[in-house]
Amino acid sequence: MRIVVVGGGAAGMGAAGAAKQVAPDAQVTVLTEFEDVAYSPCGIPYAHGREIPSLESLILQEKEFYEQAGIDIRYQTRVTRLDIRRREVTLEGGEVLPYDRLVVATGFDYAPPGIPGSDLTGLYYVKNLRRAMEFDKVLDTARVAVVVYATLLGLEMATALAQRGLEVHFVDPHPWLLADVADPDIMQPVEKSFEELEVKLHLRTTVDAFVGDGKVRAVRTSAGELPADVVVVCTPKRPNNRLASDAGLQIGSTGGIVVDEGMATPAEGAFAAGDCAELPHSVTKIPIQGLSGSHAYAQGKVAGANAAGGDRTYQPVYVPWGLVAAKWMIGGVSFGETLATALGIPYVLGVGEGISRARYYPGAAKTRVKLLAEPRTLKLIGAQMVGGEGIKERADFLGMAVKRGVTLTDLAWMENVYSPAIGALNEPIALAAQNGLTRLKG
Ligand SMILES: Cc1cc2nc3c(=O)[nH]c(=O)nc-3n(C[C@H](O)[C@H](O)[C@H](O)COP(=O)(O)OP(=O)(O)OC[C@H]3O[C@@H](n4cnc5c(N)ncnc54)[C@H](O)[C@@H]3O)c2cc1C
Image 1 (tube, protein in one colour):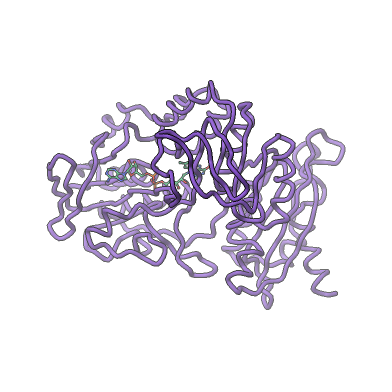
Image 2 (tube, protein in one colour):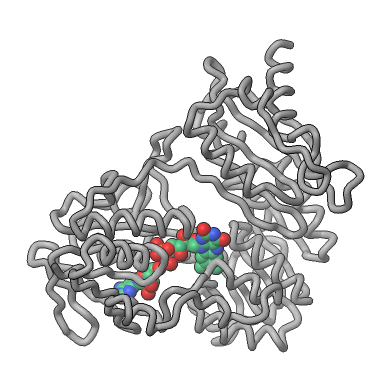
């Protein structure tokens, strides 16, 4: 059995490993246009921010690891064509690789900014480890950075560059940060905290052009020109589906490759996984794309196992998320009020503010929790949070709560750990649910 995986990111490497587990004798080949596989792109912002000492430490496995595992990785190898009918992959230079099973894991591209100057050199898109190493050296002498678009990555990069000591301008056309994902009241303390870090927020400001002579030297915005030593472009993620769509694989409404619950495409012998694919959101049933690395890895494992003859399924997604933005942690599950309203989804709301540890214990942080529940059954359908610690664990827990049909009443009277150094007597999730029930009675 010859299994060819196109892509060496989280999905591709997950697929290759799982295929080998299910069929140890299979010939598994991974093709990647990058110089490395098995590094954590998620850690790049923290290395730029000097919170972790080096970009080298993001490499999770050395090349020999895969040789020993019997996985043939072909680095800096660009695939130019997939022929699904003949079951062949064509590489740059003309070499043709036949396969029995194919896993497409070509990941994401940042959406093109689509403004004048987008072809200038010096615009930094955070992804490839080697480019990150080059950019990190540029940062040593840079003074002013402009970060464009307040996406999840934008928040991480603005935080990192401020911590690195640069003067940071953060530009976004929306009225609040991360407006596509988070509610304004969740982001309000984050915005204040960015100001404390001396990041200059330029909200409600469009990015009109990158300015420079060959190399970018400024960003033209609706509020004037911002000179920049470095410009970081954090446009939203888009599925990288060029090869798949040229090959006739079905592309869905989000631009992602269409797959079933076994990560198989409708074309025989071809699977897809990770950011190049789309999947239904389990509450709305609407297809979504651009999930996280943890989703990509899990999907890759299902695709790889099934390509090798296994029978695994990938569950619909509830999308727990979280990150550090300025001095706060934010996160949630499924959707918040803004998105629910935009989608016309009815909900009742419970909002509560508590603390992450006992009031008197050093480091106790205010934690705001918003719970959205289905009006008739009171089953949880979404949540958003901002706090100082424990947001990740609460998002994971609430993801499972949505999945299992837990109600506001269940959460209002949930059991919780109380230990001064790690948890308060009143769990903020329970407070939010109790407030929601009181409001409903009122
Ligand atoms: C800066 C940054 C921060 C992130 N932070 C987080 C985080 O905090 N948490 C989290 O869960 N996730 C995070 N992610 C993960 C990310 O958002 C994606 O979900 C994840 O990278 C998707 O993995 P993937 O394998 O689907 O695709 P990708 O990582 O995009 O990998 C695509 C692969 O396909 C290869 N490829 C594409 N086209 C070709 C071709 N024609 N020929 C050969 N090879 C090709 C590329 O070389 C690459 O190896 C972060 C990513 C970045 C870049």
